[in-house]
Amino acid sequence: MSFIIEANEHSILKESRDARKRGRQLYIYGAGEAGEAVFHSLREAEILPDGFCVDREYYKPGSSCCGLPVISMESFSGGGKNYTVIVACFHKKGKLNNYDKIEFIDKDFSTLYAPRRMDASFISAYKNELQWLYEELGDEISKQHMLAFLKQRLSGEFELEKIRVDNQYFCRDFICLEGISCLVDCGAYDGDSFRSFCRNYEQSTGKNYTGRAYLLEPTKAIYQQLAATYSDAENVEVLGCGAWSAKTTLCFSEKEQEATSNKVVETGGTKIPADKIDNIVSAQDRVGFIKMEEKNRQLP
Figure (spheres, helix red, strand yellow):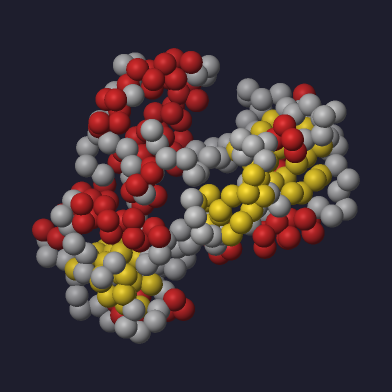
């Protein structure tokens, strides 16, 4: 291959194993879906944690997760023990600053989710396809991001952060913003990407963006806020639906407090409408840009 990727043990597993060897107590911060994914990966690696820990507002005395006790983070305040805590919580910003005596393993825990797991066997099985994709990429920045993406999936290290740029969607070096008269944002959240596009469009052209925009957001509460924000914008259409390969109804795991991690599931959850972009966009609109992140499909 034109690039070499080492598939060593995932950093969370490696550091957890090292913590155990040093006699430290091992806890998982977060007793939700992410925490369970980390637990199952640890168990497969024959590393059994002592339990889970959560913030005080989520703590319920006597609760458990995966057969292990769930304790409050306040239990660590007194110190006196050697604690190592694996972070498995998306909303961690600022919450861990008061625990300077704790050793945290803060890596990309999302790469331990079963659908996202990637190891040496995956690289070996798909090396020809990966080689083809790498060579098809037309610029060095895209090639760097592909390598960083693969390395992050394999190791759990934040490789993408090392090369991250704030203007990730609308880099004017290879996107002609002036030529975009219609865009579609699949998973618009609170409109942050569209606002970024408008800022970059103005900086690039010296004019306000007056073209069409279709903002799709299936999370009900977020959609309502987004619709209210753009209620007076004639060129912006906000839709409470998802993008799919056909017009249908999907089961959606909806968490308002963690909207960026919402996803399509096989059963349960909330029922949401979904449709093809071709059906959503008006026939007279020529789409020049689509922002889409696929979260629900499992790896081959």
